[in-house]
Length: 103
Image 1 (spheres, rainbow, N blue to C red):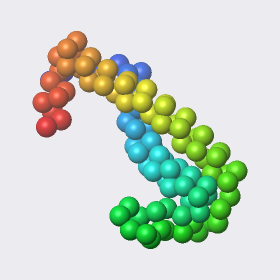
Image 2 (image 1 turned 60 degrees about the vertical axis):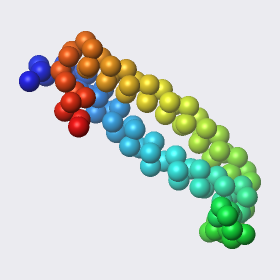
Image 3 (image 1 turned 180 degrees about the horizontal axis):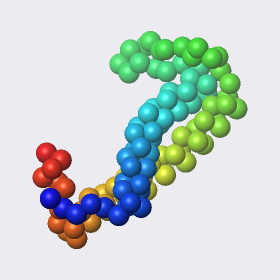
């Protein structure tokens, strides 16, 4: 058993995990909303069908949401990088068998 993490590192760990879940929830919703508001419908691949927007076409809102979607995507990459760095730190510095515990 490895020694417990410093309380600040424990908090950072929890915040990072919550951020990952929040991004996984928010990004698809922002993407769908962007297409709905910008184009009016989401095309279904391989068919001539589309899912119409329940909101109508609001290009200004679509562009605003697209900007938020792209910014959050960039931030998401940094949070993923932080998460990978933490895994490497656990594996190679703390040597606390984190990867084995995850399986």
